[in-house]
Image 1: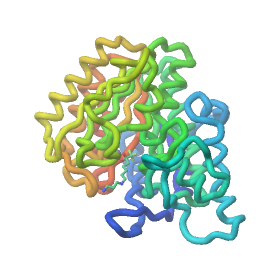
Image 2: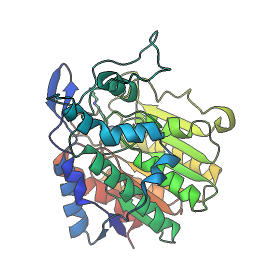
Image 3: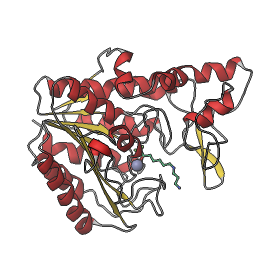
Length: 341
Ligand code: FKS
Ligand code: ZN
């Protein structure tokens, strides 16, 4: 099985996030990708660099003004003589105007971001673009006839929406892969999001569409990030009504309840009868994950892979979260094993 990886991920590093009242180094580190890459190498996966897919493909999913902002914001921050970390500090919450984008940099940051956990450093744009290209390259490989391909994306993507970033995510890699498959001729595409956190960005992007099904298993947003989306009553809108399925699960969920919810998710995907599948593959459902509360063990990841592979669909697997760094490689490759040649 082909795995797409870019060394450019490493230039997105050194940021801090606001976590429980303190500025701490981000949980989302370059080390995560290096450990996954080492596990792929020892597992015999064929590692490829992403293709130079034109940036115009980003505009199939994201607003141009948002992409321009992400590309330029760090240089602008420096040009304006600012120091420290590029982190927003105010957001257009209820009662405030969100119909206009302030021209100043602080207002722009609050307009485009939805949290304070996603720092922008000098290399963020290059890494995010490389990650998007990894996902779209994996989609291209599958569109060309491979049964499956894996994109080792870093930074991750599923919290990034059409024109908002947050949750360590800047460009929505999984949505870009799904759109790429659509544009290459797949009539319907399903996105299965098994990251611990709800993929609010992917949900928003496809919310009103009936050609892309979004199904997510995640920690209940009553207590878990991103808190303001991911409830079971969110089912899509307009033509897209019924094309979003959220399966929130309580803290402490172990394999039995997780496997039952996964069966529900897979049944919905079978009913949708897509031509291809994109998996937002987070392994922060692992019991030792430092920021999550499910109780899956390493032996459960091959079972997840087998259940998904049994759909028999051309499949693009896109890396999302997972912060128990010691086991992240084993758990990711555990899922991928079911798709290996
Ligand atoms: C909780 C603070 C929340 C942000 C968590 C972001 C999770 C990111 C992720 C992704 F896949 F995108 F990487 N901090 N007290 O794992 O969903
Ligand atoms: Zn996550």
